Length: 225
Image (cartoon, rainbow, N blue to C red; front, side, top):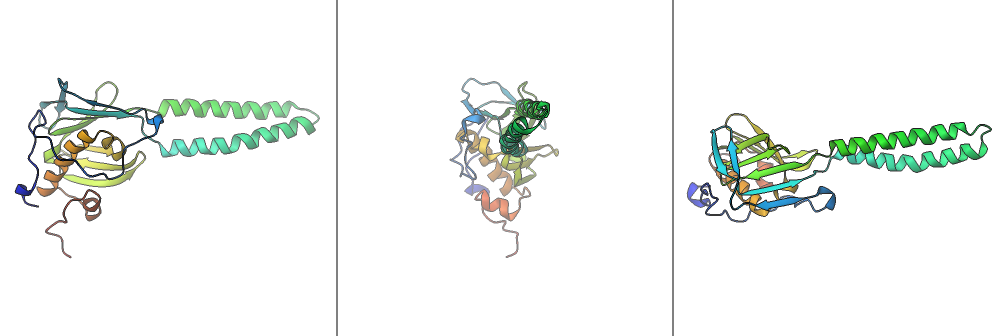
């Protein structure tokens, strides 16, 4: 793709706004994600470590992402608990000493309590922020990693514990793995990120054929048929 075929690079204020980016997986919809998006007019600063420059913060999205291991553990607990309770009832009715039934029920209650604690402790919020030329993932305190969108060295669509994700590598080797469910929850944020991806890919960023296809980017002109 020639540079002239690309949408213009927005300035620090995000203008001109990039065209709408295509859907890859779709936004997270489940209420348990507690999704929050924001469009910032008078904004905070989005700092880009590789350049040392700050940019106006234009878009943000925050949610509690899915965790496949946690989901599997909860599913296993839901399957085991009814069986265990049934066994405890049988022991209570048939055993000479019903103490073992109390032990079984106590063990199940303790296991469920530990699972609930682990669920809440591991259910952290992911926050994405984007400016006109940068994207970042931060924690609740604002600390995290940021990348300049128009200087990417590697772009890849990958599967992650948080679902299908966009893995980006910046000019200094810094990495971000951004879940599409959260990127696409704020279309304007995704538009900014995708425009940077398009420009970086056209400028020679490393990207495999499968990722190009999913991101609806043109084939690498240097690739052999």
